[in-house]
Length: 347
Ligand SMILES: Nc1ncnc2c1ncn2[C@@H]1O[C@H](COP(=O)(O)OP(=O)(O)OP(=O)(O)O)[C@@H](O)[C@H]1O
Image (cartoon, rainbow, N blue to C red; front, side, top):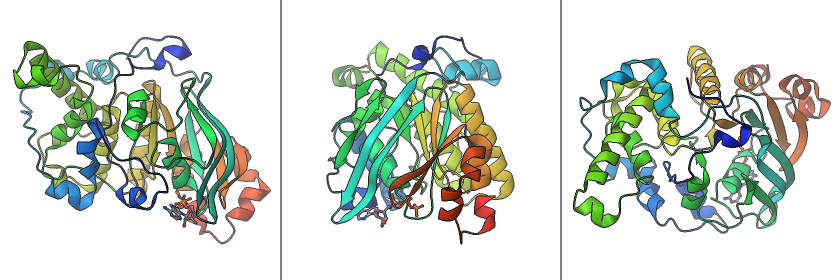
């Protein structure tokens, strides 16, 4: 595994890019959704049909991979190349203050305040329509808040564009799988690493030595990420032919390809059977143990309670509880909010 450092050492060099698409349905209904530009403009077509129809040209030879990646230690190092790994929970990485998002007369998020600390797995839960995705979208730049602020890594996120948010170190996955279906698993991940490249347009056009080295590094790192999420053997398969659970793992690998400081997972267990959920819990813990901070939105309470260290509960856009899983489970306001929700979603 990697080196151990101080809590503030967990970041990458910041030169990261968008690996995941904008949520197209959310974008069209967003009050202030910024237009996709720059590195994430190409990736904005990653949703469902868009991804299927996308004209993708990436060609990655899976046999051109560093054979040392058979070693899990090498994989772990390759997954976190520029970060000192620190699994201890540190100071605040994300500070949400009085966050409010209004859609016409509806306050989908109403004066919500919480911190996510470095190195923790943080859960955001609540019944349907509570405002979880809206909160997620406000943090990841899909929505501009009506009021309040979000500070990430000690700097205000303000009204920065989504690709800039990813560049600053926030990556996310989506409720619905969004992949380039015609591309291989490896190519999907390599695309996520692409905008980290420092080669100029001219350098790429002229196929400079630096460009070749960066491409080679991206392939090795992409392969390491696939190994890390458990689908290395599927690297050469088209994403559309992967099993659903593997597609979800691939989405996580692609998000990690941007070397985020904060990985936001939006209902990653949707559609999973119990054993897949258990495996996913293991993967989320492994991701945190590799030095990432994780924000998790998830309906499955067994998974949330089993994997998170702290939880914020929303109801009708307001925060009604915050604490450890056991504190939240015992909280009368939370029990009340979930009355009528099937037991298997709570227990
Ligand atoms: N773009 C939008 N335009 C108008 N209203 C919206 C928009 N997005 C969300 N809402 C409303 O805001 C409220 C919060 O929705 P949100 O999707 O954030 O809840 P959620 O907790 O993620 O729900 P779920 O668990 O069902 O995904 C709901 O009443 C929803 O109908």
